Length: 256
Image 1 (cartoon, helix red, strand yellow):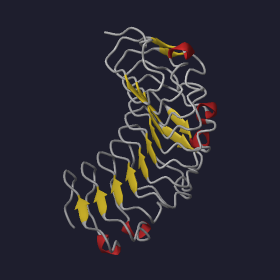
Image 2 (cartoon, rainbow, N blue to C red; image 1 turned 120 degrees about the vertical axis):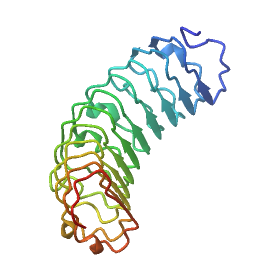
Image 3 (cartoon, one colour; image 1 turned 135 degrees about the vertical axis):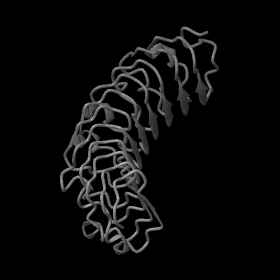
Image 4 (cartoon, helix red, strand yellow; image 1 turned 90 degrees about the vertical axis):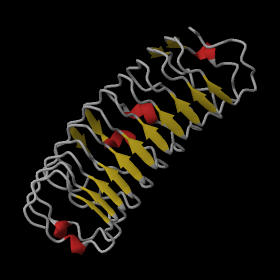
């Protein structure tokens, strides 16, 4: 089982997968010859640290996957060519604005199952091409700022400890279609959700009442998942003209 990145990898290699190894540390010299890399996956390897600027010179790198390691921070100076960053199942507790500087092509950011307590979404404001953001399974109790990600289509923050959102949090997400907020501590449906939404998941929260009049602008909503809450009644779902799926199991319903 490899304990370091092999030195004999051909310099013209475009896709490199080194998973289930025992590479504890990554450094600049590991990739200095591999200037043609487009995809790099180094997951399930117990990697604990990455030298500053390790990936900076990989000017054609589009996909970087570092799943299931022991990293405590986002690698520094990621190349501007990057389109997909998957760094779930690590020990990252804080996101810094500098972590994402220059990543104007990044489409997918997956940071699920880390130790993040709070997110200031101004930290992500430079990610102007981001389409998918996954923050499931962290320890987030609060989010702040307005989420200014103009192309975001998919947002998932399931299995955190979120209580509420500010009224302006979702205001600028004109293209958001899929919102996943199951497994939190929400007591009401967030206000001012974007009317572009197609699917909304709110299972396993603490919702006691649903005000469909606050949601009637969601004219495109097709799926609404509300199971495992504390709802005692539901009224007004007919205000959502395109709703095809309404999931209400394991509530306290007496009337519909």
